[in-house]
Image 1: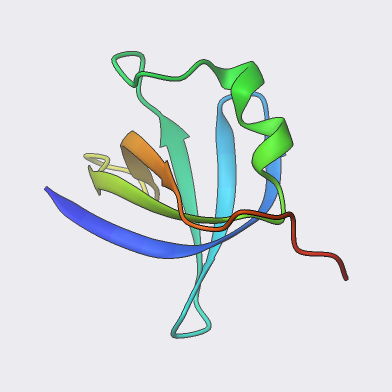
Image 2: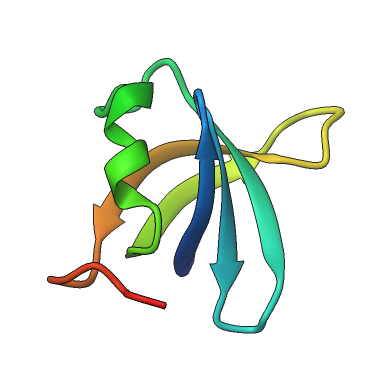
Length: 77
């Protein structure tokens, strides 16, 4: 399992987009086994996180198994 760090750009239901430090936008699907619920993702938009994940078989997305909040304040644009 790998970890990817970045800023959550947008959230829709159990899916989210993450902008990595390398400037790549990656799509994630929240695992049913993750310790957070889909409704917990919305307040994380604009926040810096580390995602433990693995590639989803047959998809261009990652499956997010766990998220760790890395910043203390929301990023304002």
